[in-house]
Figure 1: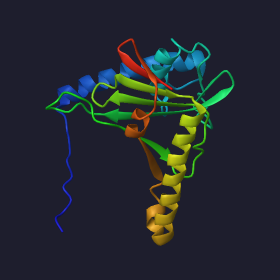
Figure 2 (figure 1 turned 30 degrees about the vertical axis):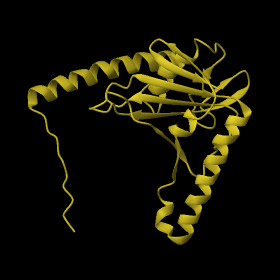
Figure 3 (figure 1 turned 180 degrees about the vertical axis):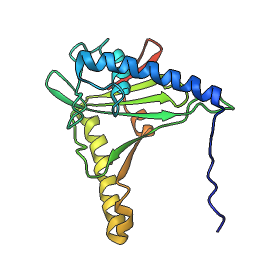
Figure 4 (figure 1 turned 45 degrees about the vertical axis):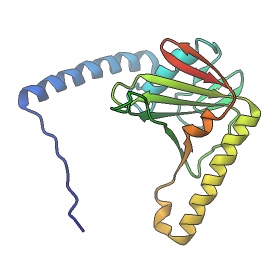
Length: 194
């Protein structure tokens, strides 16, 4: 078996100093935001949630983010929303983006009445597509897929306990593309609503 190759990346002192200057500026802005709100914009998925909010609030003014990061990710008109984002790369030959897989904790709460599933460019973090799924029959299809993935994960774990450590199941973007939906562009982001 070949030895695992570790790729290290070190910077020249001048470049490292420049990078640290960016860090300093980011920390200053983080501190200003924290003093104002008590929310650390560098924690967990806060920046991602805020970039999604910027688009969703344009068609759903009641949409609000749960910054406590426990339970639902967002809420609108009393409906709890599960939100996932996935980074995808643009293919070099075609210039098109590949399909995403949205990751869920196998044993987490996966049954919601609305899902917002977002793809973003891996290099720039720019939003590409937002799937906003609220139709009950489509939410049920998502839940059915995720519950089947959970059962498959549990079955693998019963055979080999070591497989229980990686508790991730996937919802493929290809499933979402089969849904009957309306599509529009908001600030350069494709918004698919169903």
